Length: 261
Ligand SMILES: NC(=O)c1ccc[n+]([C@@H]2O[C@H](COP(=O)([O-])OP(=O)(O)OC[C@H]3O[C@@H](n4cnc5c(N)ncnc54)[C@H](OP(=O)(O)O)[C@@H]3O)[C@@H](O)[C@H]2O)c1
Image 1 (cartoon, protein in one colour):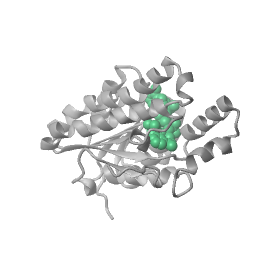
Image 2 (spheres, protein in one colour):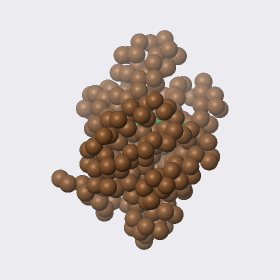
Image 3 (cartoon, helix red, strand yellow):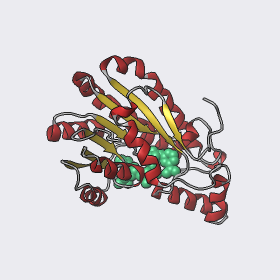
């Protein structure tokens, strides 16, 4: 299937690792031009090298917890390419733990990075997309926004809020041919997941394999996803092949989510 992404301009946050980096490589293979944003310059440069098939790649080292960062990423994209067709929000990492042991800072960090960076990036690029009469926004959220996970509540709460925003902005966007949707992974083997399991292992005194089995036994497929299995959906949702999807999302979680909604 040709996704017709050639020369489309895609801004990707969280592009230095994990799902953002994997999506960047796949978009490059499909001929998209890329704006890669995250904090770590060396990692961004490595991803940019992997994206040699792209007709144009820039990196924009940014700490997206800073209020001014989203506008700076947008400005860099417009300066380099003159338009923004696609926004993929994949920056984020929430710590977990036992609810009554999680301090305010963990909740605040989760909301500030994952929720607010996504809100600010959308707010920054939507006027450009409306003016172009074209835009595809894909928010990488997580199925635990609909099925909260006891040990991952700061992330579950940020995800629930993002699902609400992604759904709620569609009425304002759709008349301008701008759509926002989500891809909702379940547990996926990225650096974020490994860090999370190590932290839960340390705080509980259990082995990493034991802690991880708490999650995998809830997944009918019985295993973590690989990043490519999620990125395939992200790139599809960024393409016009998903044009009739609006304010909704796909659960790509091996059957973790048990609800009907
Ligand atoms: N992996 C999973 O199991 C899973 C499941 C459901 C949902 N998700 C969601 O998917 C998204 C991507 O997760 P992932 O697994 O790919 O995580 P990851 O491998 O840890 O990558 C996270 C990305 O976010 C960037 N980032 C972190 N803090 C940042 C900041 N302050 N400013 C700018 N960028 C920042 C990181 O780059 P720098 O450190 O270089 O800044 C990195 O590129 C997250 O929102 C996560 O909640 C993941």
